[in-house]
Amino acid sequence: MKSSLQFYGGMPLPVRVITPVRLAALRERAGLSKAELARRIGVSTRMVFFYEEGRHTPTPQRLQKMAAALRCDVEELTGVRRGEERLVDLRFAAGLTLDQAVELLRRTPVGRDLCLSGPRLSALEQGRPVLGRNWRDRDVVGRLPATLAKIYGVPVRMVVDAWMRTRPDEPAPVRPRRRAPNDSRGAADAAWRSLNERQRVYLGEVLRDERMTETEMWMRRVHHLPVPRSAEWRKLPLALRAPARVVGYTRLQERLRCNGVHDPGAGATVHALERRGLLVTSTDVVRHPAVGEVTRVRVAMTRRGRAAARAGLGEPAVQQPDMPLLSEWLWGVMARVAGAGPDGLERDALSGRAPFYLGVGYKSRSAGRPSRGFIDEVPMLAPDGSHAVGYRWKLTPVGLQHAAEYLDEYRRRYPQVDTTGFAALADKPA
Image 1 (cartoon, rainbow, N blue to C red):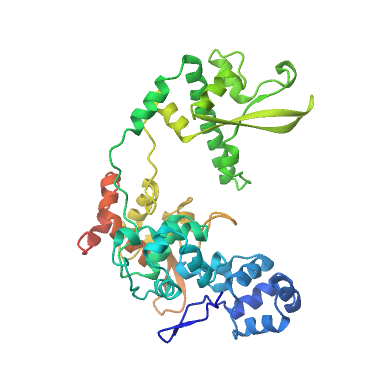
Image 2: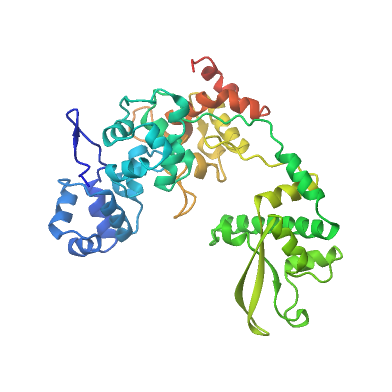
């Protein structure tokens, strides 16, 4: 494979540089010598010396190893604040060189349609015009963020936001998807009607138990406790393969018993729901204080099962927001900041979790995703400019761009949110 340090049109392909002073400070904070850091990332001590002098820049793979050795994020080494990532930052955070990213992209349909190459991806990351077949077709280009997200291991919205920071003079690469009318609700109703009374009780109680578990996971996050992956906690304990008089009943069994199902277990009813694609069962082994190791049966809802249960219980179908858009709550926060005018919103007027989703420099937890970087705390300087006397929340350039790009769609979806603060954006050409 060729090196990424090629030249195109007299311009070097981009690399993400580290901040030498910050590297030295992080190494000292971690209590590592240059030799020990060199050993951990697989380079010579002399190369670490060059890194800290700014004479060389580590490759994406070595940057990843360096961050792991120093117990920090890649962003701390590069000086990029959370919520200010550009496209090249996402690639480096994924540990991919330009050539490696291009090789992966060429294996995808959109990569082939756009004839992606090192120079083209480099131009995209540098904010320069990208020339070539299909690059003027927004429908084709609009498929690229989802592919980049999959390759870089990040949500699509992070790629869209990074794209808008990298290429601020262009429209957003992804438009909200207009959902065509479909019969998904009818299919959910039909699935529910096909069930007998006992099967409906099972499916409805599994949905309720899943919601209760989801609330418990939310409370754990609020109290900064570890939370399993959703694919794991959605596997709800259904039964223990041991006498109930010894091991008792699971919470889900108790819910079923309250609905007249006095022999709940992983029998014919559960298997019938599984055959219909409404539930998935699995087993594991747990230790019970009375009997020691015992097999536990767990059950998880499929999307089809969840839709059928909602339809049967008379609940509206849940529509997930399109990939680049905010929830109603976060859009309301953006509107409050915009409504505060050019002076910005008082720092104390914005509390709770909103900054962790919208504020520059925030991340919900050590392993969480950075915020979208749509708002920032801007210092208010004293009259003589000597010091900051306070801070106010203001929209960042990408926050303004996002609002301008999707303002009509937000007004259609969330008509109750007051968007008068965005009045100036409505007059801007699309």
